[in-house]
Length: 358
Image 1 (spheres, rainbow, N blue to C red):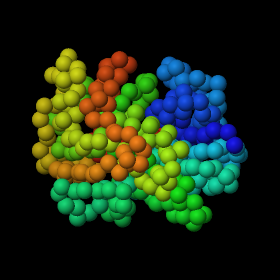
Image 2: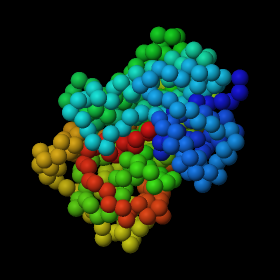
Image 3: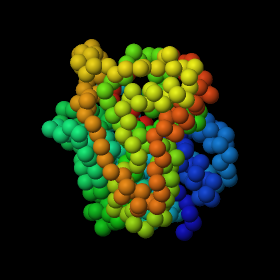
Image 4: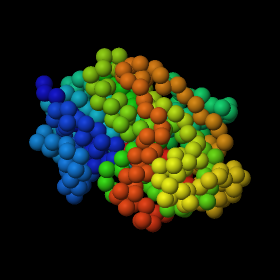
């Protein structure tokens, strides 16, 4: 069997970064897209980073349709399931994203099992771990924690990511193949934007650089460097001890005001536009009455999140990068691509910090 990989959601930001690394490493990559009109744009971005395209092909597949998945997985040694639905606005229906997220994950895994795939890598998120009621402050979460999908504080994105990952583990365990699955769980992913296509964490950087925030909500997030996220995915294909594990990727939890300070230092010409103080929690809560998406940030306001990722570093064999570098990379790429000049609608939802992977 060749080193052929089925990579879902290749037109998404994280998947494009992964594809660049895989192609440069000599893997044959089959990338799935929802629409064929995404193919040329994706190829252009990959080529701009000197990724060889000779071993790259595309297939149009839909996470909510059975058609084509078994055929696409045939002959593949590995599957990386990165695609996942991600809304820019939250829905009142907290189950709205479950069919493509959870059912889509099972379609991908089932196709891989039928094809005899050796290793499955699924991109999850820490949002599947830390959102629950009655948390202590500070609150420590880890590999064995799960968000409570029945709690009203879990929005549609949190529910979909949690249910999708749980379903993945249940499915693989039912097949006796749990140790062939590894879930990569980053926090807020930052780094080079690659291109001008809208992506969530970069939109967040854009808002700050555009001066759209008078202050930063009192909110902390585990920062994940896109380079570390990519490396974790690729190494998990061959590392012997990562099977059956949930790997939290990131080195530091940073508050939003700290991210603003990093950007101000890196881009002094934008310092005047960046928030210099935190917004009081009551003000963010007040905004939440006018903006339904703001309600999604309220459960985490003022809570000091913390986690230990050293176990993942040990399993993968490398140290995660400090937060500063990827925030600088993100901010510099926004300026380089002239994205800070494009008006972006403000949305306060806390899941805007967690990167869309589709």
